[in-house]
Image 1 (spheres, each protein chain N blue to C red):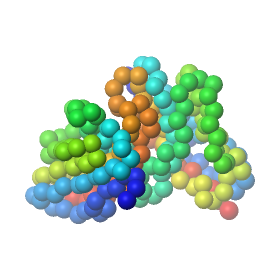
Image 2: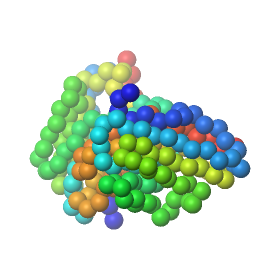
Image 3: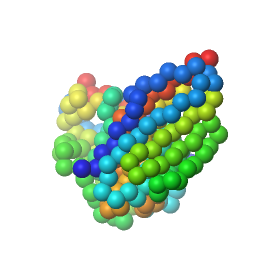
Image 4: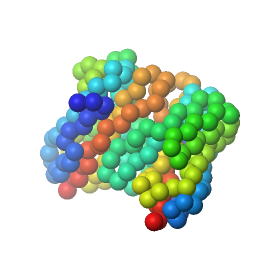
Length: 110
Length: 111
């Protein structure tokens, strides 16, 4: 069964304190792994797509990496405006369905 | 308008009402989706329309009925809902095999 598990469920960081969020996945043939940011009361905002193990993508203070079993979202020197829920999703090779994790709620304290 | 838009943004309805949610995508994508988002749960895929075919999650109750008249518009028709159907309903679109782009959602409250 295709599934996604994210950890931790919640994370509090001091401004400038770097950390990583984890996304473990089980899928019958990975087409793509996706990271999203979601602010309260809004729809998820696309951040990155990773397609194969070893791939990395960066955007400002965020860096996403991918292995055959998990993905990490590294946050370097976070700022309060990085506070949000970060969602991970995978898409299998067959079909158009995306499988989402429950997200990590990140709070960055000034 | 750009991206994915949804209306209304907020909806309060009684259990006997009938209402519809609307989604429109301006990205030229060929697939559209309805998701339900409840607190502490993963996004729950309800329906997918891709290349004019419909795929549905068999656990979605029949009181939710989708309609996709063309590749840019998607509706979710609601009737005789239950309080547990209160949630954020998200529409998304994608070009097959690529990332989804989400609308802002409709916050639904069923009294």
